[in-house]
Amino acid sequence: MVNAEFAKELVSSKFRSINDFPKKGIVFKDITTVIKDKDAFKAVISYFADKYADKNIDYIVGLESRGFIFGSALADRLGCGFIVIRKPGKLPAKTISQEYELEYGTDCLEIHEDAIEAGKNVVIIDDLLATGGTANAACSLVKKLGANIIAVAFVLELAFLNGRKKLPDNIQVDSMIIDVD
Image (cartoon, rainbow, N blue to C red; front, side, top):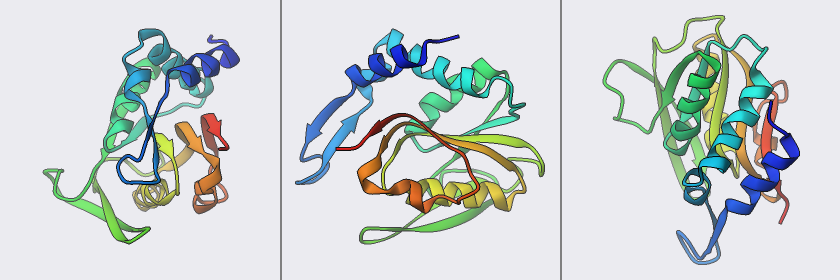
């Protein structure tokens, strides 16, 4: 079992902030410095594995693309399957899709229509919760397949963007680190 406070401090110290990326005025939170550090990466996976160890999780659902990094390792640790949600045109079999709003326009996510059996327990994971559009679309897709969403997990939540408010009220949101700046 990981010491949660130690894990949070370690991971927080590894994030790198990059000003004006991908455009002027944005402070990008770079996770590459978290995943390159073996202890920080292990701390993230251990933190979430401890949280869901007794929840009978059938699948971890990772969001393209950084959710794949954490999701696959977490699925391995929990001994469950791993499912991907991707941008349009990336999955080879029949899919269902969900559009969502961006600041300027819309985007879309897809999942294989046979990816998750109805009634299965899932955790959706991504690296970052910002405005909530991507995570909300992912929740909609998983619900369309009839799965039980146990939680939506994020390594970092940018609380000042209020993304949590876009997620369904009845879904547990677990953010390892909450940034309020």
